[in-house]
Length: 295
Image (spheres, rainbow, N blue to C red):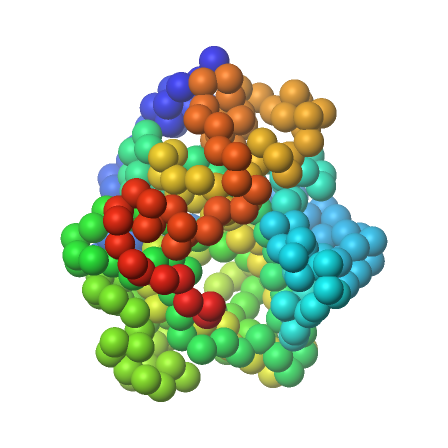
């Protein structure tokens, strides 16, 4: 049985190299870093794409509804302008390979230590002529600039992305800011320090969920399929409760490493919520009246 990230690194015979420490330091200073490229992703990229495209045909407009059943009840469209899929660890065993991506595990260990687990694997692909988003954050605003990392989003690029086909734009170092973006600027359409990332297929972008960021428009129509893996501290409920959404057969097939990373092991805390509402958790545990805004 695996009970720590340290044990996982030992099991996979991984040691942190100076370059790993440099990557973690860059992340802590800038709010993001890039693993270029991931050999594991490159080796499986054609199969990843094939499965994604098959699932999009199968699920159609329902794609991405897991955890958003209240929308599905009324057939509302929450994902205009993008193809979406959710709960991918439960859709095909190939996606479970990501749990053993060595450079990713080492980088996450450098950021979280042993206090981390994975709570979701989703996919988003902006359609031609769409994909633009206002600058936003994916977590509750910080109360202090030196608050520890709570949530990291790992974007696994199955296609190359740039300013022509809807890559992500970020504002470096804004992950340390206190409060909402609105507290600094009312117009969230742009920022003078923002950069649009040029990312090669097979690369993984790690981003602090408090970093100001947003999608850009897919002008040339080239495909831009990205897997999004949500990583949080073990004491925080998952974005998508893996005990509920990953079925019994898949859970049984998981290696000890997979069970620990997804928080479905025998000794893992059991959360009853299907979907984690950050605002409710934050108010309950930190006694604050912060309200989560829709981004």
